[in-house]
Image (tube, rainbow, N blue to C red; front, side):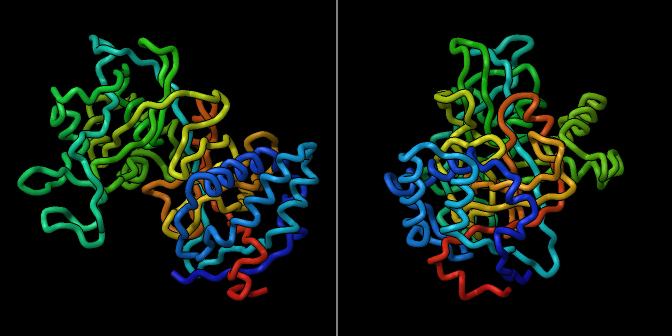
Length: 373
């Protein structure tokens, strides 16, 4: 795949002037605070670095401290300090999907109904130092492995774990009534739990088995079970409900298993703290390929066939790169965080649309010399 960068003017971006970017600016400021006060993010292969963002991060926080912001001032902030670059590929069109934070009823102890657990990470599960050159016992590409006294081995996969591989290890955080709910929490990488000894708590990604992720929606399409133009989280759930005897077999074909850690819900409006180590902003945070893009980067995303989350118009929004995901691969691939709860799930589950991606690069960055008008 060949990637080129095409320079645009803000005045030509479809929907830029009509967007209301206040929430995106708040998200950008959270990334700025994290980068300046705690640790800068790793630089993606596109080349935008902390050095490029440091001045605009400081300017954003100074503007936030001044107060009195409105959409016009925020747009001016980005127009004055960034230039839009369209990410153009020769053969792969841009694509957006959606994800969300499920809300799931749980119990602290299992019973006849609540019997499907969320698991913590095993203590002996460790990252593979270099997935492209792993130890001989580990398949290439595996990011995690089990470390033993006498060597390393692959972690059990989804089927093995769900049929008892880690039983009696005390890894259970809580139990849900629906295995399908647990599965989709794995796909989303997070969940907000209700019930048990704590009224509400959050679980977030803390590791995985290391086996490849397989989207069961694609399996259903390839098998002719659901037409490609009807595939969505809702249609997949409906298929699983209609075929309970085949549900495990299908879900086990996604061998990737997710382990979680518990976290408090400090602000009920915001999503979980994700890969960029800041809380996700509903409708404004986006998962990207972290090998290509640098967390904290602003994007303008235009998806003409996708309806905006809040208004009946085509999706055209300022988004901030603050997360990543196994299935989010390549420079023109984004996963839009829709929020928490069932309504956000309905929104996220229906997103699978072609999109144009415009990265907002600081004017002082080296990308200026790599662009074509």
